[in-house]
Length: 96
Image 1 (cartoon, rainbow, N blue to C red):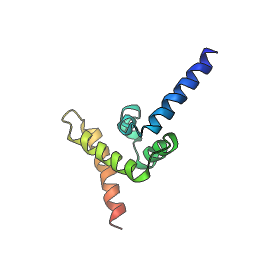
Image 2: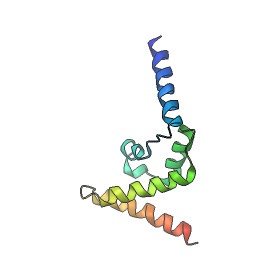
Image 3: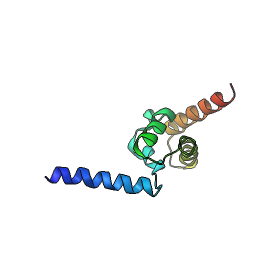
């Protein structure tokens, strides 16, 4: 019975967050290792889990967060290299 309660509670929290448009865009970068970061994965997770999520806002949040991480002096060279590749892919995509 306790297990069912936690599922219902988690669902309620997710629904409440969705209806308030409180989408935790930056949490992705805490939960997934930087080697796994990708725009496609990020957007699909956001769109699939938050009813009011919008693809354009998710794209913007993804790149905005990457730039914030890149500007952080504590970010390692490995993380900065991954971020640069992701940003370069964006530039390639829009300049085709």
